[in-house]
Image (cartoon, rainbow, N blue to C red):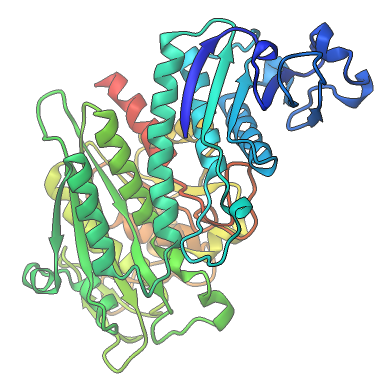
Length: 488
């Protein structure tokens, strides 16, 4: 979408549709107040009223859009407002809209521009690749938005550019999650990473089955051995380690389809398992954004990718696996496969001597029971790192909720016949999964993000989300890394 910035009053724009963002209980301009009964619109958060001014003001249509009270205004408020505006414009089949900003918004101009751009782009997103026979009105897209502000600033324009870049990474992640698993195999996901590298300059290395075998990726190989589609390890590297340029490792689970293996899932639980690579999608999306924003960091993205399928060659309950680290895992349930492939990738991350390891995975159904779709579960070994990610979550609206990783939970995953077992029982299922992962990161600062409830939406919870892949994690990681650079 083309997004422009101009100085002025949106009521003076000769637009097919103008959006006037209004704070709650702030009087409307006299020309607008005469078009509506005062009781019909108060500016409450998300409230809308479509008006036809008939020459009272220049726009042909005027959409009043409530932002809520000024003292509760956040970037998330603006993000949702912009998404609502774009969707209203699409419903009205208006290709170009003007969005008027209130002069009393007490947020930094760059943040305003970024939030509006993110909301507009993500609100316009649709996944139509496999739709056929669509009518023009069904494929109609808003082509341009002009932000009309009392005082246009370079900072706000820069914020718009950042917001569009971040939204591009989110949409990449959404597209990957929404792609059918018969199309997005581990090899195809690796091809997507290679294409990303060609676009952005990120260095990409792919480990095929032969190299995984040579180097000893026992966990990843075991999970993938039941499928005709062989596993891959995807390594993406932006920048180089140097003094004053710390290394951050981002690790994303890349199960392109999870049947549960021999511990087969029920049919209903299998229908959304194309989303079991949501963590890898977030890492690819974030790597694209990091490169395009040229952050002064060394960032390594690691994606262990496999299909977990039932066959005569599948790994079995009661198997004992030897991972890349040399630690052994007793398999009690082949449907707890994500932590097994991540064990290898997390240990591999240690060779980069990272300042932090952040891992994202659609790991446990237990986190969905605990938090639903409104928050990502977080566990970590370093509180300063966890606090920084939590703050990034508040800023982006991709909120996280921290759970403990006490020693008692680590005891629950100890095995009688191996070093670890891959499930700790029914109790504290999300936490014991996090404890399992923490066993493979050494002493490096580590945060695990369980996005099982937030990576895929049956019903969108926010105006800028759609049914299907949400792209969760891209904005969270980007915000964390942008703030991290301030301390470098």
